Image (cartoon, rainbow, N blue to C red):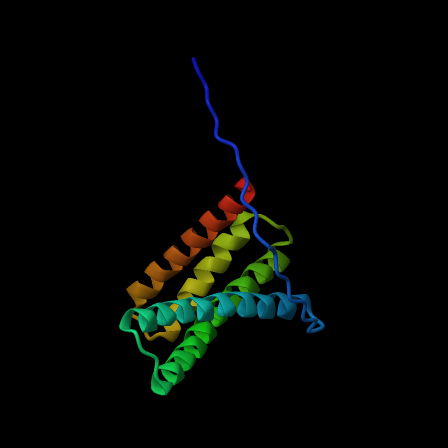
Length: 146
């Protein structure tokens, strides 16, 4: 039976910022916060730039509004990422092993915490915990493929 396979690679520049907080847990948490917060703020900047180009005008008020939105989104998603990275590392330390289960548990705890902090119902917190665990586990498995 004929067999075909697609092979390729995708590489991008890697940017690492090293901040030594004196504790591996804090180092990873701050690193996650900074990386994902920056990505989120960049996403907002790109969307708002597109909006300004589409409208054909830029105002001082729009720039101030955009900066506030960038900070808000960056802080929110950076915090979520920091909590996740911290939880995953905590699970690794508690369990004494590095495997996909740390991502599952870290994602579930993060999903539940973020949902509970948003004053969601008990059912929504459980659904968000399941979603967080599923997304984190899928991301971990995709990392093994590359």
